[in-house]
Amino acid sequence: MSSQFFCGQVRLLLKRCYALRQDLQSLKSLPEELNLYLNNVDAELESLVYDIKQIIDDPDFGVTILLKNQIKSYRRCAERVNILETSKLTLLYHFNCKDYYFYKFAEFFCKNINYSDTPPLVSAHSSEYFSAIPTENIIYIPLCEDKFLLAIPDFVHELGHLFYNCYEHEIIRNFAITIRKYIKKQREILKNKAASKNYPTYFKLLEQAWLQEYVIEFSCDIFATYLVGSAYGWSHLRLVLESEAEIYSPSLEEEGTHPADEARMRAILLTLEELGELEQIEKISHEWEHFKSIMEDSPDLEYQYCYPDEILRKLSQQVIAVCQRIGLIAYDKQPLTNDNLPSLMQQAWQQFHSNPIGYADWETQTIENLKSLLLPPK
Image (cartoon, rainbow, N blue to C red; front, side, top):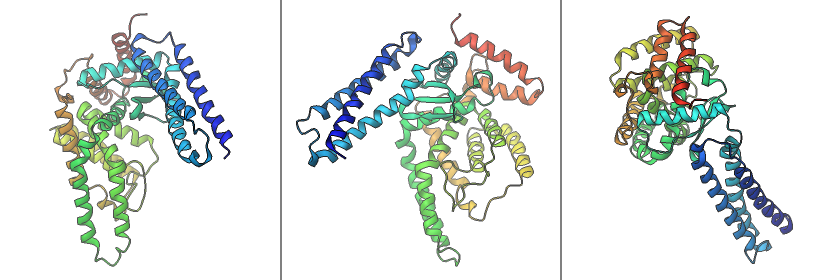
């Protein structure tokens, strides 16, 4: 790569920052509540302009012997610009009435549960189901969910990713010791078996999967169950019903960013058990076992080592302890009113079970009432 090519690209990145700041200044019609986010993005762009100028103003800018380090600095800036442009800036630039409804929904939900961090921005036109970018404080929700309630507990799971991003060290500190002890114990038990020559590798990968990925998803499931109770268990069953994935995958020899759905349901039920919700455990378990018998899925022989109840329970206890320490209000401590969102999510599933045929009409009217509560009069 020639130094001229590189120097030209750095200057174009600076131009992009200026262009993005200019676009940001044009967003005068956004609701006043979003000024905080606008100001934060502008401050980040201003910081990027400064950092890029530092590269350009260096007397040795473009000198071949220093080009490698300068490219590294440029790449860090380019990555920051790309994240801003494709997340917060895109959302704010295309912000519409659905986004605003879910922003107010998220704000009100956070108030209900005593969530002290800044409420997330919400994009109501996700192309990847419910998802989140914790570092940007953004949650993505599918396009039509402003007309439905039964999947909304999955929003709470995504809020869990923001929660986990803040309290990761506290959650993982003790749990990492637990999972490593468990892995070591299993390896010792199986090391002398004739068929176990690959087990050391598999268990090493399992430990990595737990500490890098599974612990996050399970923590978010536990977080959501703590806040909306059985509504999250029913929502998980609804999601599995729509999915074509095997409920016992990934197993020991498989890779995946998310743990097996069967294990996730056990984590949810164990959390409900920790919270004393025995009646709903029985109801969810009945439907879950019936679903499994119809689908005729079965685990492989190594699946038993991947997600044992003892590990899931320890993690559940750890996440619940963090939720309680920071003052989050559990579902069973919420007032049973229509203006309380955790209670409303539970009520929606109760209505569905009691009258599945007439549920859609109840849901439509309930959402109209909810929008009247959350949104300012037109």
